Length: 365
Image (cartoon, rainbow, N blue to C red; front, side):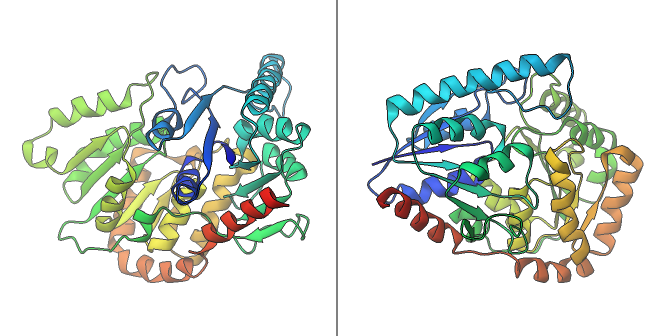
């Protein structure tokens, strides 16, 4: 039996792959070949998925445009090209079911699969639906949602509350006390030039009081990893030893970082937010302002309202504001940490097994 997985959210897909590998199934993955539009850097999924023994099919579909511009025609052409590519991949591979992890990457795969009468199940990680995911839910037979308060606008018979999928290494994390607080800074799999640039202007001040573990992404356009590596080399040895930098961390490395992290600075992607909620780690979120339906801001506000996170909007971000937010969270860390207990109560740990069961129900329907 063959199962196709598609979409732009890699972290929960990896958790699902780990679970499905326990069964006698063949897996294929349809995802982006490039990290960013106009950037030649390979996407994280194109590198990581084959390491799990899963056949990877790379393509680069266009994004749906909400506003008409000169780029709209080119984008629509790429949407159509992505659909054609997905159709022929699915027609040749003949999977019994398609698992969507959302975004514009999964959309052409879902539509092609629907035309080929392949049953579809989708997983929604965020607190709101973007345009592509709204369309995907129309074609899906089942919709797994990550938050119990979400999904009321969706067909009740389709919705299943499964939470977001946590990898086994993350589930096993045990927190350790650190004499010197450790901050994990990340822009997600692709990295964030804005966060990286802000860190570069505050790095020496941060390292006086904290250990910093920094995931920069691997974009060749900005060259942030190379810039910050050079900056580290020019630091006094005492400060340089407090700064660890990498383009990307694998799951085992990330679990070790989480075990030591006092708090995290990151974008407000659904997967990071869910991991931090489960582990009870406070965060400073810098949401992407142009994310679909402003989903990252909506994601982060859930934790801000609980009192376990701060939000720094892109529009007002500056090195001074960033440094002040870090120092404020450090000074009030006990208060923020206590509030994370409420966030953990919102998470679900057995949802992956429920979701896998739904996949097999669709195969056998």
